[in-house]
Image 1 (tube, rainbow, N blue to C red):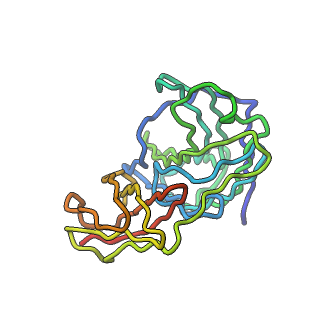
Image 2: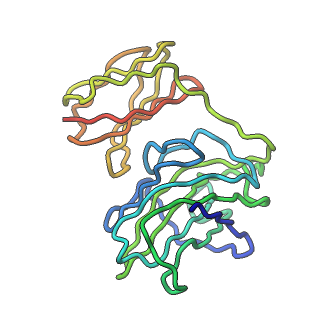
Length: 239
């Protein structure tokens, strides 16, 4: 059963700041598998859509260690240009044990972006705008998942076209190289994240060519590729 979560700006709070770009895994972790009907590459990634105030955004995922979970909350934070605090922040709670709620480890709701949400049209320089899912556990442990997003004042949503026929191979990959190919063979910016959501490699390619992955540890990785104004995502096992 999907519920609707309305993030209320009537309770604007100075949130506890965290500058990590990946999900913590001390307890949990949180996995956001679907955001705005698109598969999420990794925690700390840039989502290739600018949302509009009032828009409803479907969010799906899971979180673990349910028997210890106390509070599941979501927030939208816009950080000052020097990261010294927030220009704008709001949050709301989806589940709270103290209120009699029962945690089942499932995230499935529609995020309603407020009509008066901070937008990129304000003209004030900021460092980043972040959607964050956070779970508080007992004892005092918390884990979170960040996604960099934009909210603009336009009535329509701006999307990013997908790279045509993106090919990332071999898969599984050895520990030496990875080919990044597309139909247009344009220059590419490649970011690779490990299974914990940490950014472990950033590189550029000239057209279709192989990249050096000797620095990567074994395990599942998410490859995020930007080519001009297009984007593509692939998951690769490194052995």
